Image (cartoon, rainbow, N blue to C red; front, side, top):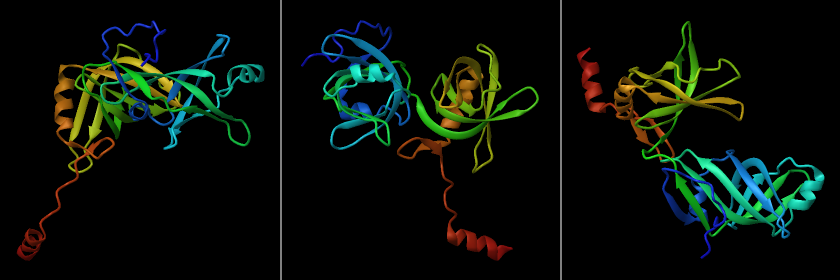
Length: 255
């Protein structure tokens, strides 16, 4: 079978490449995540656009938001059966760049704008990291000089974590030291994740940052992970064990 990106010469240094089925590739892509699509006409004309992934169905259709394009470009490039080369980045697991080649199925412009592509038979994953990144959705606080900023801890690995918050301010300085405070809701135990800001992006109205742990931060990360469990979609705090009814009754009797 022809490699779906035989003409793609983009380097992925340090990453591991593997082929997966198109259905399995969808599991790596978050709903609402940004994707880049290159369209190609039968005459070889090409254009790049960015849009958002919506989802897919059991009839082998992938749904994207209709990209914003001039009407003339839409008429030229968005035609059924034209080739589309899709690229997106996944933060799940070890992290990966997901790429596949497919064709346009439908372009819906009335009432709701949708771009429908065929689900490919095959996709290619380029692994980005050597360690596993666990998905989270935990409330936390970034310790600022004079206050605490409410943030959301989005993912964590052996070497760092990702967090986000809404709004355009404050803007954190790359290379600066910061500490994230995480409180276990069941035990009220406090975990202080110390690290250095390494990357930043704005995504869907949220400021997203990557924090690289210091040696102390790595120790705290291990303690935090010991309090988490996988609920089938992401890591969450372990639920407290139910109190034994008989023991509870005896305790009440003593009082």
